[in-house]
Structures are given as C-alpha cells and as structure tokens.
Image 1 (cartoon, one colour):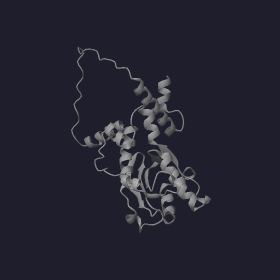
Image 2 (cartoon, rainbow, N blue to C red):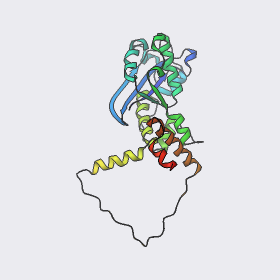
Image 3 (tube, rainbow, N blue to C red):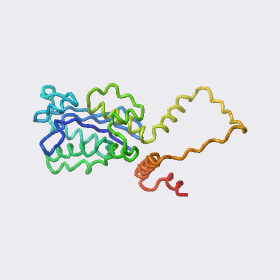
Image 4 (tube, rainbow, N blue to C red):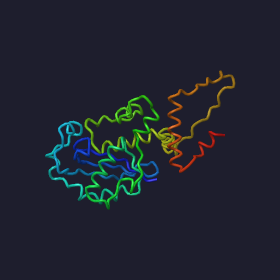
Length: 238
C-alpha cells in the first residue's frame, strides 16, 4: 500500500471565508516504510495571512510574496498524491481546504476522494484513547516520539512527525521487533534460558475498558486494511 502522510498550513481556519492553503507537506510510505520521497511546497495565497495564523505557523505575507500560486503547482501535487491513501491528522480540515482549491480551478479537478482514500488519525486516536487529549503533541508524548524541533507548526515537519505517530499507533511494537531482528543478523545468537519449574504462577491482568476500546479500534483498522474480516478477527471469534 502506498500512503501519503499529509499536512497543510493556511491563511486562517475556514475556506468558506476565503482562506487559502499556503504550505503543503507530504511524506511517502510504501508498505509502512518511509521511502525518503516527499512533496513540499509554499504557496502564494493571493490574500493576506491572518495574524492569528502567523502566530501558529510563523509564515508571513512577506515570505510568501514570491511563491507560486496554487494553480501552477496543482497538477504536480495531484500527481504526487493520486491513488494513495492520505493519512491526515484532523482530515476534514486539510481535505476541506484542498477541495476548496480544486473547486477554484474548475469542476474537472473533482475532490480529494475522487483521487485518493483518506485515513483520519485524529478519529482513530479518539477511538483508541477515549477521553484523552489527542492533538499531535499529545500523541507524541503518549508514544514517546521526539518533537522538540516543533516550536512552530510546519507542514513538512508535522507530516514527518505524524508518520512516526501513525506507525506507533498501528503496530509500532511489531516494527521495533523487526528492526531488532535486522540488527542481530550476522551477530551472536541470544541464549534461550528456560524458566524454572518452581517459579510462582504468573498473575493474570484483565484489560481495562479503555484498553478493550483501543483493541477494538485497532482491529477495525486491520479489517479495513484487509478489505474484510481479518484473520485475527476470525481467530478471536473462535
């Protein structure tokens, strides 16, 4: 599966009020592995950036003055994302702005869903972590991901961070095990020591309601990726 981790920065919060995209950042992953291929573009929005938005991302009107308008980069951007699954934190926001930009170019451009599928990591996090803060910064803390370079929002940096968060949310432990196995190739074999027969019985810890909800959300994601009921789900039902 080809996935594009995507983020945008904008002049304000509502495209229906004429706000526009000023930065797009995309990171490509194939089979859950970052490829090193990315798309990054600053855009002249043909309007002023609100001061409240500048305080968030630090992108000024002066900086954007000589950047291309969306119409001149739209074809290249669409070619990069076409056919992929877009992974976006709070997808309705970014998708709404991209659709607004496409609409300004004409109906022949369609919408994001005409070209891609979309996975919203904010919606996923809310299912996995009900009642908790699920901003990108909060998820970085929860999954121990370093975002110390994120003093301001930036589309490409946020996409790179979201890629790490997404992998941690959807099987990071398995990836760490695979990485460890790769590091051990060609090295010394670990010694397997059997446990003593006289050891006390292991305690059984039952999952909490929150953990059960997180498991259910993860299994739904696996089913979606499998295009139906996954093998894990079948084993659970047995």
